[in-house]
Image (cartoon, rainbow, N blue to C red; front, top):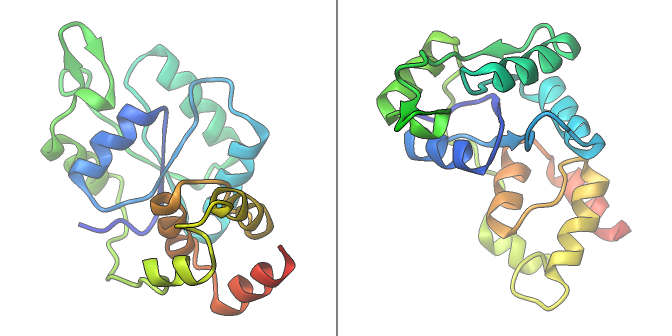
Length: 177
């Protein structure tokens, strides 16, 4: 199941659980103290692909959800039952089964999309975004120009495809860095 929208989660463990359940790109808030760079990334995702807010069913998760929904009232929301997200007294998306996560996303009315990958690993290599000593710096500079943030090679490739970056935008930004 490939999700069109970008899923906003709290942290890396949530991203791991989502990736084991569906094919999707996530943005991690890293808790309540959301940085400007993360807000900018959420804004871009919201305006271009749509977002699904999927935070933990606990007090902190609800506070984060409220902050995001205040800024993006038309965002979709996915919810997990506390029992589905509980393991050894810990509550979080990372504890939920893949089936529970898929069900929560279906109830959020997520959009399923066909594979629309424009960019490949070969494109990344040709552009010097992977496999070279300065690849990390090039991804950082290009990500800033395109408004998709920094990521390792795999994450960066996903963002290029998910955020709908055109070839023209990509080539122009490459020339500028």
